[in-house]
Picture 1 (cartoon, rainbow, N blue to C red):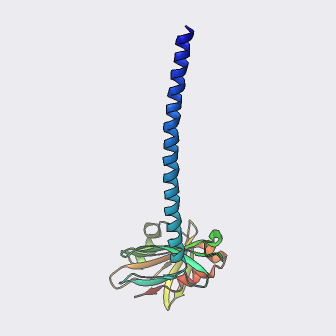
Picture 2 (spheres, one colour):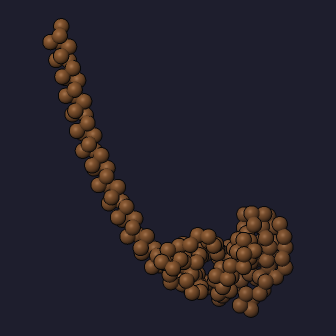
Picture 3 (cartoon, rainbow, N blue to C red):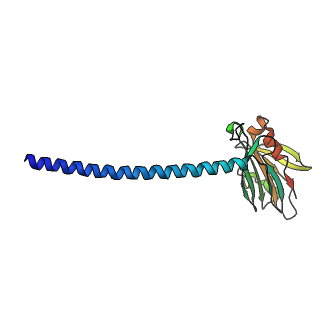
Length: 194
């Protein structure tokens, strides 16, 4: 009986050791994989920093141009769809060139298949927000935009109807105005209709 028990104990211990060996090998593979992913992420982050330090001018070819990241020490990340518009985060950079998220703000510029009257009649359809406060007009580069604050605290700038019955709508968060974030206002002021 002792021999059977002893043999069983040895077999159990061997199985346990084999399992640990496999696990150790798997752990090593996981660590190698994690290291490679971290290295790739580091390279990607470095490239992103380089992009962030440079103002990006987006030319829609047909409707508008706008420049993101205007000013000394300002960065940006921009996503751009040629047909519908652009969306970008704009933020100050720290001295080491990394992103300072304490003042992060966004600027969106979209082209909609609507007229200014369409947007005024049904703002939620075209901006996804109801009008909380009508702010009249704001002039940007000689063009008067109908301006309103939406119920999610975004401020919208709706251009006059373009010749092909489309409209350009820009938006920024209200906190950018509240905190007088020059870098977001400077970028908004670069918006030019064609």
